[in-house]
Length: 258
Image (tube, rainbow, N blue to C red):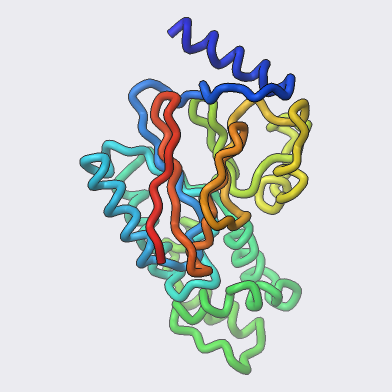
């Protein structure tokens, strides 16, 4: 245990100095974490990935699941995704569900449909259609009213319960990333839900003490940059749905293709 703490301390110092530091960051002993990237309404791919996780781990109880947000929009079964996640939350109390920028947008649309109408163009139409709402030619306010009336209350309760970040050992899980150079307590919702290039291009001295696991920015394959791990692999764009698997100091990827 003392050696592990020493290794992580050296790891952080090397990151701050800009060296090509070894991957010694670790999750707590006895844990195997599967952090799943952006699902975007692909309930079919989520089912396939969960099946592979269960097969690999022996059961979902043997794995801690962390979902990184953007469960909805663009794909054709956002409702199905939310229903599956609610079921997982009920059956696995240690599962973690983070908020993505698309969950923020959809909740904001419910409150201010006229001002947040661009959500419909960002995949919101597909989300409403998954609830049986026909969007063509309807005023935005009428769409918000129908959605509120038709969607189960448990769906809204789930969406409102989502966290912005989660920490396990030396890893911090967040949807988009962190503002470089700012401590965690100074990060805003906008930083954690929307940031892209400024986070990705952070200089070594600006990087956080945690290894950051995130989604939000789609790439053709998962990214392990050492100090950050990106697992949005474009499930809704014909790519893959990916989980990073963290156990001890090991990190690897598990993906299903479209």
